[in-house]
Length: 249
Image 1 (tube, rainbow, N blue to C red):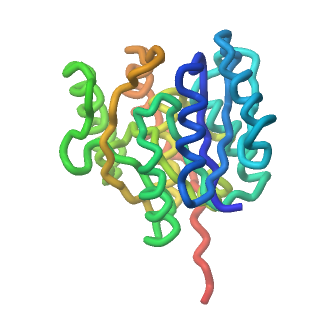
Image 2 (image 1 turned 60 degrees about the horizontal axis):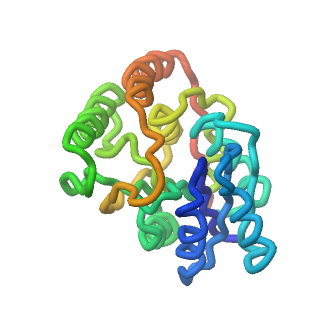
């Protein structure tokens, strides 16, 4: 089994069927795992109908009892993917802010170009964000700049949530040691992979703000990222990170 796309959902009934179908239309044959946090709008019911009617071998769902956070949703999905032995594991939003066609570019970066982690980057070639208020664009852009300075990572989009990992990365970094949530989770995952010696490649994408449904973003998520990254950097001074295993010839 090659690639699994993990999509966390909460009240995404307008988007979930279309995003799954868009992924399944790609020639790579990706599977999809939905992590639904008790959506009261029936998101999970739509997924389960699709599983029963059409995609029993490619579409999967884990239902959780309530809103437990983006970070814990992905960690749950990562552990499931490791158990099922997927070689490449993706993070993607349900609302089409990430273009499903760009999954192919992330996959190629890892599968063909040697990256261990591929990031769908909004900022590696300028600012490629559509339909965001300018205040949010500036907050996101300068948050990434701040994280880059504090951590020393040579990554332009440190808060990006559109990514591909080789399974080895998720097996190595110690998922139970990841503590931050929201944007902080995205930063901590990148930083831990970086400290473990994995190769990280940014792939330029265009991020388009959602058309359907309601954004889950809040200022508190950014605040956690800004304050959490300083603690992350301080803890790293006293932490020994497991290292990427070099493959023998």
